[in-house]
Image 1 (cartoon, protein in one colour):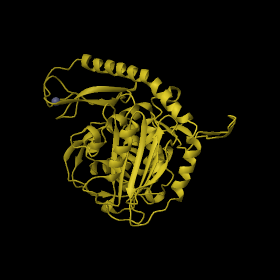
Image 2 (tube, rainbow, N blue to C red; image 1 turned 30 degrees about the vertical axis):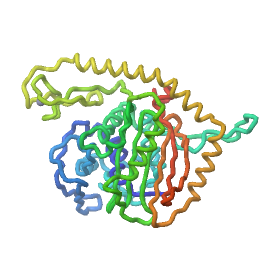
Image 3 (cartoon, rainbow, N blue to C red; image 1 turned 45 degrees about the vertical axis):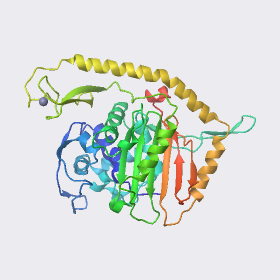
Image 4 (tube, helix red, strand yellow; image 1 turned 90 degrees about the vertical axis):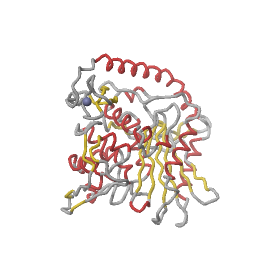
Length: 410
Ligand SMILES: [Zn+2]
């Protein structure tokens, strides 16, 4: 199945390529005002925002409330051709020449993207930049422990570990920001990155996101397009949140790792530049080394010495060590799960049942792909039909970042 993605496309089509190409930082300022663009087919393109215009805003603010105009501006600068190059590396196979236009930035696609391929793409960010082709099994053993079938997943680096680190921090904003579109996805004690998506006329609802442990993508909609009205809530997000909260219940708290090429800086909220002692409102922001903005000139004060910066770096280092020490447990847990006697065939059976499952046009479907970041193995793929005839597909894979250092250090 392929569906229009709406704004859940922004991290893969815009943020990952544009941060990699150093076209933007988290504090790049955009004019979020009604804008008419000239598109690649020569036609005028006037996208609108879902919920009004915010004027001058930073990238982080644009991500928080999913403003559209800044993302089209970035795509204009990035070009759809470069965006598609990245998307293909992230395992998206359903783009074509008709997608070479600015609406690619907002997920207005010719054919659309499958939730499984989308989960693979988001998994690449969670996996510190390594794309691992999703699979429904790792191996099939006979009763006498002879391996008769082994999955060979394609693996490749698609963005740097540093860019992945920046993206993770940025994508926590819809969850932790006061105007966040995915605040209900918060999981106590865990860093959570999440991006919502809604298409025209509310035909499709998405929630794509990840924690240090799992990546999950959930789509909710009708086979034959119908508007989804669910008390002004995103049902895909509610399902995502419910599944993810449950599978993290017994896992140790974990934060996203820092990366060596990423620095933190205290930023002046008014100017978006490096703060000094007189800047009244400041916040900490993450930058690729070499992309830290200039000093604030709107306020005149003395330089904040680097001590605070150094402190943050050290405390981050410490946090990382703490996380690593808990990784062993995580790895053990996930190994136990993966080597459990039943899953291999169960997963295959349920994967088949997913394909066989057909639904009527009058009830909405959901398709949730949850993947472990370790192997991008779809751990849990089940179709359940509840009394209201809504079908739910869950596939689970675990994030690599916590459990496989040999890959994450690449
Ligand atoms: Zn200032």
